[in-house]
Image (cartoon, rainbow, N blue to C red; front, side, top):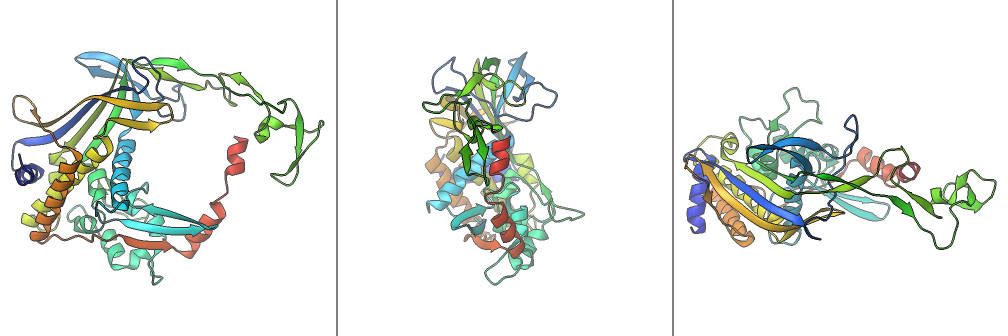
Length: 391
């Protein structure tokens, strides 16, 4: 199937003109160190679970099995967005997005709608202004984004289309009827039949003794004082005896070993069909095809390689992968697409949408912090270091 044929099938599916209901992504992985090696799931507040990991009972092959979450839907969406952002930075891809350019303490920081927690509706953009000093929400793009409703998401398509793929909610502007758009693409990674590991943490110091005491003078400056109350280990020096408990007396997360690791993803065509882009005609149909191709491109950029690095202690190698069309057919239909073809498909879809009259703002909208946000950033840039050290 060439790109033109693939586009037509995708466009029909995204507007419910065919019997394709979804694209399903399933991948099997193993630890980079090999079967039996420990991996580190993400940690969450312990609360009443007694563990920082998220364990649950799931069904697999018709049988109940214990599972642990290795990467959430939110995290997987972020990985797709980060992969798209990298291609944008490299000049290989053009996607409408917002950029907040920050300078503080001689450093430059960039936040984009592809990396901000609430995407284009994040509070950072609410408190931003353009080069003429106009509050972003008072500019033409900002006003259009603020007026988006489920009945017409054209402005999101024009200025921040990734929001319509990965979901967005305008929760920071106090709007009574804040627009919400659920994800049309989801993915997660789970580990099957986890066995808890144990880890001890400590610190060995070649020179100083952890029992030696010090007195803190003027914040970070300190002088040794045997009668002081603060130990060198609290300043990052000296030895700390190995222990399986943290300072709160809780067990140090020790990772898990697993019987299997799977990625479970889906691009839902019924969800895409709910995205309305102006009059529901040929342009809207083409726009939904663009969103579908963007979801596929993000998936291939993030997960189309030989392995994944999820976090420290969680390096994975892909063992197998299957992408299938899912619908009313007796069995899922295999579908193969690599990164290069996904990019070609995306560009083809954007061109078809432009021909239909649906044009987006391909250049990034660059903003800067307003005075109040700039002050907050300046004040907070180094704040919290002492608090983290105390914790």
